[in-house]
Length: 250
Length: 309
Image 1 (tube, each protein chain N blue to C red):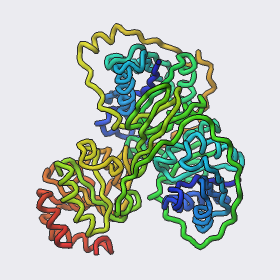
Image 2: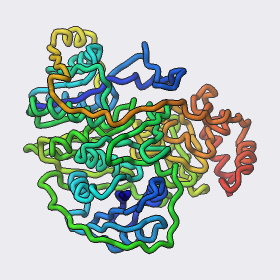
Image 3: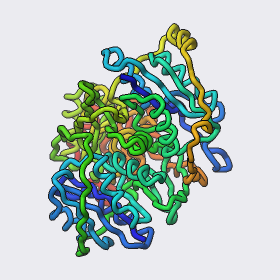
Image 4: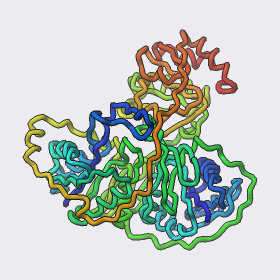
């Protein structure tokens, strides 16, 4: 069975982004980029399913400029077999991303489509569900455990207050939560070998999709800072400070 | 045109966030309907009809809606979507699962976790783990969004809205619900608690997590939360995780015990009214967002605090 993993190149999760002086956008010039962490869980899961003999081929796909090949190389170094870059200068909203991924799914015909549950830059958390809708396929979001047997995936999902287990017929779209697995580190030899693996580039325009840009970012701002707090010397001082706030402690 | 709220519930009780979504929905100054989809709807519909600001309750009753899948719920919402300019829900695992699917079926974009409704098509939402606030405008004919419940007051009771019965589309062959496991707790739910006591990796073990934090939480009638590091280390179940990938809380009082305060954690708690941080490391990031910081050994300070309350 073939697995398709969709990944996004985002600002490294350790970096606190800044807002441009004119408030037009975030300033990510020269900032360290990497694979969206949740997407890395999706890659890892596909590789583990291949190691178990369930998945036979893994294709990774990302959307962006030629520089976005670095996240595909990372996926190849982890153990993905092939990679596709859908090349565009535009940044796409989740619905447009889902439409692009749909056409890749139609070309590749995977039985399993894996993505991270959200991207840590726009924090939208929509692409997987939208893709499943467009493909009229079942979805299992926020997966922390995936078991596959007889063309069925049994997925444990993280929901508010606990977990839910679904049985999902394949093909299906599954989105990964952080606790699905611990992604492996990429070793240098693998990175060297990954340079030899193929990356196919498809121009977005050649897919003939009608992508609307219905959501515009008007401005960005830093959130209001919390006023500086004070350090207390002991528990007694802490209690007397807390008692100055109406009714928060009895 | 009208506004539709997709109501979350546990089969018997409306989620307390629904009342907050009703308040958010008033921003469009058009009639607000609430959709109840369940196997048994009488009690749920009555609770929704009682909320001030609700015009009408749409009731979809069918055995297939017990543990409804996202696929089934989205198909149901689409059957009535043409009557609505706005479709919204409070941001939660439930709505994050269903609403993007609804939006894609309607061929529109969606705005997740909206913090502020500026006007009928313009919103403020957090990006980069809430470190940046983006003002975004959607020109879509149907505005589909989730709102952060804690940013909106809960609508009061005392209303008696009418109900309309919906016909339920056949459930597609597809996903099947198998099981669910909710961590039973006598404590208030994390997302709705007035006080939250949260623990980090510094607690060192699951036993310590319970022994140190539970007595304090008992005294304060608090929910217990955890940092991702504590959850990953196995000290607390994952549904207690506060942060970008867990629950976002905004209690009156948040007590962070042995938590370093990574940006992903701050995202989940920086709207708390008063933040207390107890940590042995004076350089811990958490002190930057705390109203009151105490550099101390948590194994001494927390029992002292508990005893003094």
